[in-house]
Length: 354
Figure 1 (tube, rainbow, N blue to C red):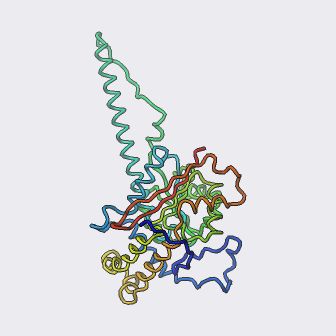
Figure 2 (cartoon, helix red, strand yellow):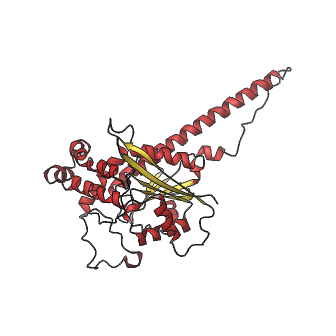
Figure 3 (cartoon, rainbow, N blue to C red):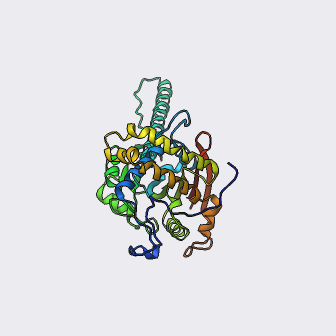
């Protein structure tokens, strides 16, 4: 929708308890809102993961995660293999496992196609040499190598889950399905990420090969108030080679309407997707806290979501970076429809070209 609502940073019930970076240790601050119970936070995050990775016909032709993967591939290809993707504020896992699976599946298919093309070219070359060899002498053909061979031997990229509140059981389960999905078991602050983060993964998994860090914020950046958002962007600009901010909503009436539909949706499908998790079902159907929090926080998320101009303005206000920091960076942004008729995901991507 055309009309855009002014940005308001209301408090979310299932907030990540981010504080000002200078007062992280101040847990006794009387102005700090009461913390949402962790077991209920896990249930709410599980619902958000469901919304990311599932699609519900006829209103959705594919999952929001699949649409975002296509966007990321179109922006980064063919350089996507140069990065290690670090997801901040991963919650219960969100779309990261789907990102990893879909991107690596596409890279594997690309590698297979290149392999067959090389073999086809070598076969054609061998036939031409045989035709030009009237004496019948056996020609020795050594396999051709090109600069892409090393990459083709290992075409996959790695993804890392992190959060200030690690959701280890869900992450551990997700990582069992892929050797290219990893997690950090201790809290990670997106405004002060450790410089040895990738080295930590390599220490526990020697086969892991760090590449240029690319940060992901999937349904997360709107959680940060302006001071913290500037701190997160500063740390990102100084220590990463790229970043992407993905939101399932925008700040307009259409997104507010779409969020309201999540209540009846979760009421209708939770029994199927969460069957056996009786705590989840109790707090969905008997005492409907989980769908209620998803809807209320979703409405607030719409009001918190930033547009391209607001993100760029925050970066301009960052202290401690060079005045010409934009040199060498390029920024892309846009929207993609994930739910008919009004549900749109917004994205903002920064890529360091040098």
